[in-house]
Image (cartoon, rainbow, N blue to C red; front, side, top):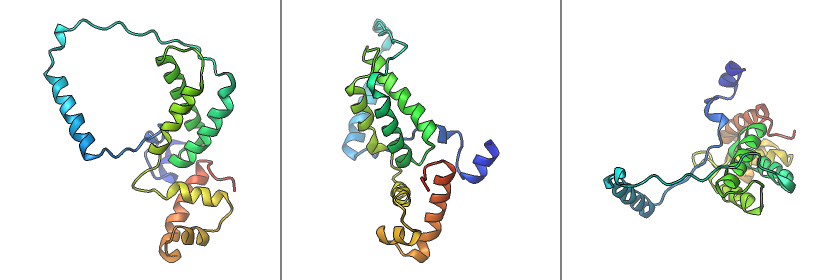
Length: 176
């Protein structure tokens, strides 16, 4: 399976197992972050008493949020071009971690809102059309239609669309 994934999916099968978030940090935010890190490195940590750790609760109760996690996972899988089952496990883990870190043992709307705030970081900035191509293909559009919808020349862009659709099919993202 590893060799098949390595050959057919043309990517790192280890990194594919994680939800990848993309974020471009503006220059001002980079400068503030650098300044904060420099101040942190100058602090003598041995002068501080360790803070008591918050107990993380296990056995988080999902309640009525199973359906929401499923819908979010489908959306995230298409946006990140990853396998649905892997993304579902990651979304579930993120929701459990958020609830646990906030001291709750059941999911609430706040956890779903947190997951939705991550949506904007799932699209790869170096290949922003991948999720659009998969969405158009799921709508039943042809490769030529997809090229025209993305304002690309069918003669040059169709091989890229074929590659994206082949990868999406192997990962189970296409309904076709």
